[in-house]
Length: 93
Image (cartoon, rainbow, N blue to C red; front, side):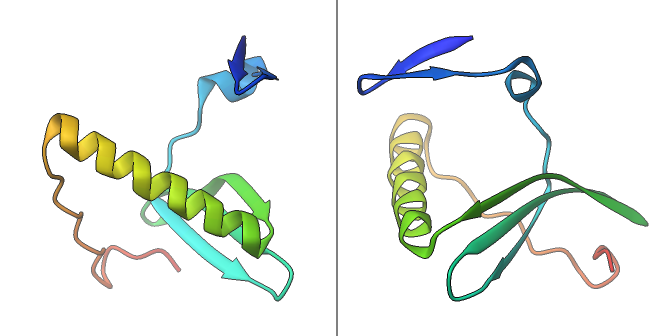
C-alpha cells in the first residue's frame, strides 16, 4: 500500500498494514530519546507489540499532532471520557 503525505510517497508494508493492538503504553526516556512500548496486556501476561524510539524534539511534535487530531475527533464525534487507570490488581509486573 502506498499513500501521499505532503509530497512524500509513503509505502506501508503488509505487516505494518495489519496494525498492532495495544491496551497499555510504557514510556521511558534518556536524555537523547524517548521509548514508547505499546503493550497488549492480558493478565497475567503482557507482550510488547510495537516499540517506537524517537528524539525528544520529535516526540513533542507527535504529542501536538495527537492533541490536534483528538480535538478534531471530539468536534466531529463528541467528547470522549478518559479510560480509568488500571487498578493494582489489573497491572502487569
